[in-house]
Picture (spheres, rainbow, N blue to C red):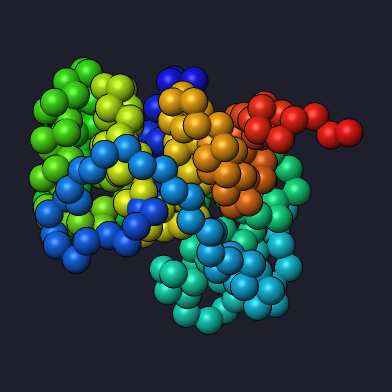
Length: 231
């Protein structure tokens, strides 16, 4: 389970807080462990309803219709809408990869350099240095989804579940469709014995990415634990 969480959060580089992020440029203060699952926004549904374009072979709707490229937000809306209706796991994975790329850029050379150093430190399991570098990233770019997400992974690996959840909440506050962060919340809640909130978070992830296989299995197990077998 721990390996799955690390893979989800490191591979799904996009980034989400159950409470709104602070206006301060410094990383959010850490608080005692508290789990609360917000309602998922429906931007993807609205984007899908408004899009007149047919889905492509990978389930994604074409982003280039002969006009100027849509802005970043519209491209993400289209990708998330396509992810929700992707016909196969393979098509969904292809779309998810595009979402990851779209959510990765920081727009700051300094943040990018610090992120590269943080990734190297994490690969050598120097967790304290990784956290220091990610703290620096968040001072430069407080909305950097990958930094919040990666720092949550490090806290999880250090078994600091409270701070991991706080950072994941920062991810979902900024991008409520971040299925990797929802999956991370589900894994942590399950590990600390909070199956109810784990189930809610798993279902949030699946509402965004229905073909996320590892979370599908988790949701089935948690459903039996929380709701019991159907009569």
